Image 1 (tube, rainbow, N blue to C red):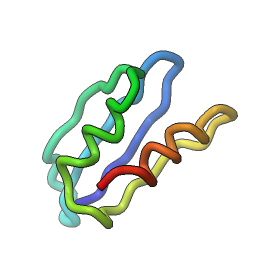
Image 2: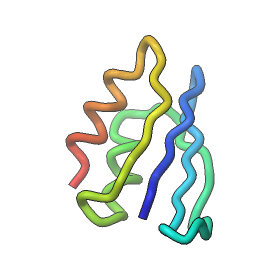
Image 3: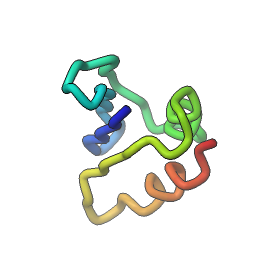
Image 4: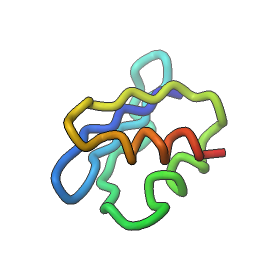
Length: 68
Protein backbone atom coordinates (compact mmCIF):
# COMPACT_ATOMS: atom_id res chain seq x y z
CA UNK A 1 0.00 0.00 0.00
CA UNK A 2 0.93 3.65 -0.27
CA UNK A 3 0.54 6.06 2.62
CA UNK A 4 0.46 9.83 2.18
CA UNK A 5 0.71 12.16 5.20
CA UNK A 6 -0.42 15.78 4.91
CA UNK A 7 0.85 17.65 7.97
CA UNK A 8 -1.15 20.33 9.75
CA UNK A 9 -0.55 22.26 12.96
CA UNK A 10 -2.45 19.93 15.30
CA UNK A 11 -3.04 16.79 13.22
CA UNK A 12 -2.02 14.83 10.13
CA UNK A 13 -4.41 13.89 7.36
CA UNK A 14 -3.62 10.41 6.07
CA UNK A 15 -4.60 8.68 2.86
CA UNK A 16 -3.91 4.97 2.26
CA UNK A 17 -4.23 3.64 -1.26
CA UNK A 18 -3.48 0.55 -3.31
CA UNK A 19 -1.07 0.70 -6.28
CA UNK A 20 -4.08 0.93 -8.63
CA UNK A 21 -5.14 4.17 -6.89
CA UNK A 22 -8.08 2.72 -4.96
CA UNK A 23 -8.40 4.54 -1.62
CA UNK A 24 -8.45 2.11 1.30
CA UNK A 25 -8.64 4.60 4.15
CA UNK A 26 -8.56 8.33 4.75
CA UNK A 27 -8.75 10.24 7.96
CA UNK A 28 -7.21 12.43 10.58
CA UNK A 29 -4.60 11.47 13.16
CA UNK A 30 -4.37 13.87 16.08
CA UNK A 31 -0.90 14.56 17.46
CA UNK A 32 -0.83 12.39 20.53
CA UNK A 33 2.15 10.34 21.62
CA UNK A 34 2.47 7.20 19.50
CA UNK A 35 -0.65 7.85 17.39
CA UNK A 36 1.11 7.96 14.02
CA UNK A 37 3.29 4.96 14.84
CA UNK A 38 0.25 3.02 16.08
CA UNK A 39 -1.67 3.81 12.92
CA UNK A 40 1.19 2.75 10.65
CA UNK A 41 1.69 -0.49 12.60
CA UNK A 42 -1.62 -1.73 11.19
CA UNK A 43 -0.01 -1.90 7.72
CA UNK A 44 2.84 -4.04 6.39
CA UNK A 45 6.34 -2.98 7.33
CA UNK A 46 8.08 -1.56 4.28
CA UNK A 47 4.98 0.08 2.82
CA UNK A 48 5.72 3.32 1.00
CA UNK A 49 5.12 6.49 3.03
CA UNK A 50 5.30 10.02 1.66
CA UNK A 51 5.40 13.02 3.97
CA UNK A 52 4.82 16.67 3.26
CA UNK A 53 8.09 18.24 4.38
CA UNK A 54 7.72 21.25 6.59
CA UNK A 55 9.95 22.85 9.19
CA UNK A 56 8.92 20.65 12.12
CA UNK A 57 8.34 17.30 10.41
CA UNK A 58 11.37 15.48 11.83
CA UNK A 59 9.56 13.97 14.81
CA UNK A 60 6.97 12.48 12.44
CA UNK A 61 9.71 10.96 10.30
CA UNK A 62 11.10 9.44 13.51
CA UNK A 63 7.70 7.92 14.28
CA UNK A 64 7.57 6.43 10.79
CA UNK A 65 10.98 4.88 11.32
CA UNK A 66 9.86 3.31 14.62
CA UNK A 67 6.69 1.76 13.12
CA UNK A 68 6.80 -2.03 12.92
